[in-house]
Amino acid sequence: MSDIHSTNYSLRLKDSILGAQMLFVAFGALVLVPILVGLDANVALFTAGAGTLVFQVITRGKVPVFLASSFAFIAPIGFGVQEWGIPGTLCGLFAAGLLYVVLSFMVRWGGVGLLKRVLPPVVTGPVIMVIGLILAPVAVNMALGLGGDGSVVLAPSDVAIPIALASLAATILFSLLGKGWLKLVPILGGIAVGYLLSLIFDITGLTGAAFDALNASRTALEADIATKVAAGQAVAPLIPSFAGPELLNFGGIVKAPWLAVPNFTFPSWSNWNWAATLFIVPVAIAPAIEHFGDVLAIGGITGKDYVNNPGIKNTMLGDGIATSLAACLGGPPNTTYSEVSGAVALTRAFNPAIMTWAAVTAILLAFVGKLGGILQSIPTPVMGGIMILLFGAITTIGINTLVKSGEDLMQARNMSIVALILVIGLGGLVLPVGDFLITVFGWIGVDLTIGKMGLEGIGLAGILGVVLNLVLPGRKAAQATTPPEELIDPQNMP
Image (tube, rainbow, N blue to C red; front, top):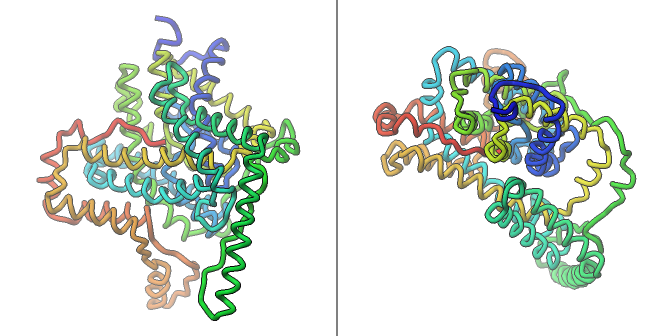
């Protein structure tokens, strides 16, 4: 057996190219997350590489996985950056990593079975579905040429829609019809096709013509609105437009230096943001349980039992510390990537040291300033088209988690848990926890100043699911109907 096919750690310079190829497989999803939520893509590259190295140290270099940006945190990070800024949001992301650490010690104490009982598929499945469904409007808005929240126009819809559809179609075709390495990089393929089509639209003047038509339409609407306002009618104002006659702006690429230190950002240590912590930490419930599936999947590929050696307790500890480290530097939370596991299966490169080279390559690329400029120039409709598929895939993974578990969803207990997680998670309910805590501490004479703090969305859905699973009667009977081997879904959610 050659060194790359051996599961023993062996660091050799000649494997560095193969390691760079592994990073290439993960690259599209890795940089897409920070671009969407307002973080620095170069920092995400650095923290992905550093997090992978930390993971390898903790797991003693036994597991050939690569850690990078998690899609599960897109919605809470996006909200957090708008609500508390990046430093405040990083407080919550740091704490999310610590939740992984707590769960790893739970496994040390009570074994894997304890975590399965606390986080069964009937909880994690619908929580994953909530993550995907909450993000759906963001993808659609961006595909239409709007900002993620639909509050601003970024590109004329006449060109945004065909570019988004082309990017979406290319991503699907790469994943379905691609051969070898091409099948493993559908996101990069979709970005490349969308970028090229945007360039063609700009060069041929189609973008400019669509921009003129957009301005003419907005001018007519503004006149109509002014007429109605003069007549005393209540009308909604037009959303602002920042669209231009070109989709691609190369100014940022030209201005960016070739070499530059990533724009590291740090949590607000001196003014810890408890609101962000309470909002984001519950989101980690879903990717934490998915971690089991990732470890099982790579173990199935290499033929090694990583659940027992180095053990879930250590793989989850490594994932958690890598996530907290990323938050300390301004990067998104980390998770293991199924694309890279697919590349491992394709090449049969089981040597974990190859992931060391992938991590080193990511760290080196983080200092290439031009790369950040290129990534920032990707048009919004291109990302929107790809995200339609990605966020739908997240929802599908949640459905598959329930299906694979064999749970009877018509059973009153299971129906109650799934129904409440979905409706509460998607319905916009907010629990004003901050006001409650201020009131409680006021009763005992303590003046607590914590600002706005509320539970909502994915976080509220995650906590609600865990609590319902623990307090509703019939838990043992429900678990008895689920085969133990089906409690963990080997699918992965980036």
